Amino acid sequence: MAEEKVERKKTELELVAGLFRNTDKNSNIYYTGKSEDGTEYVMFRNSYWKEGASKPYFRVMRRVEKGAAAAIED
Image 1 (cartoon, rainbow, N blue to C red):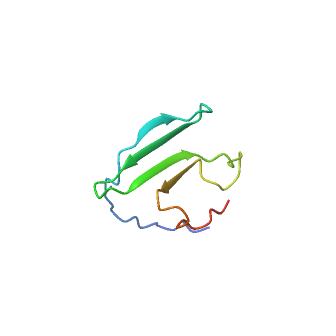
Image 2: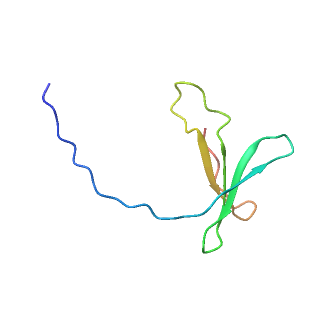
């Protein structure tokens, strides 16, 4: 097999938000934070993750008005 040269783009990281560690009433750890424009984010461990599955370890959600969120697909 011929080896293909993969061209990588140079990128930079842009700060979105700082997250703070929290614990819910069931002792589950999650993280919350706000961006500079006031958008609120919540990050939590993906409880549907299984070894070998192509699912993310964590989920990052943006807090929106009740009823405005799209369905979550697992």
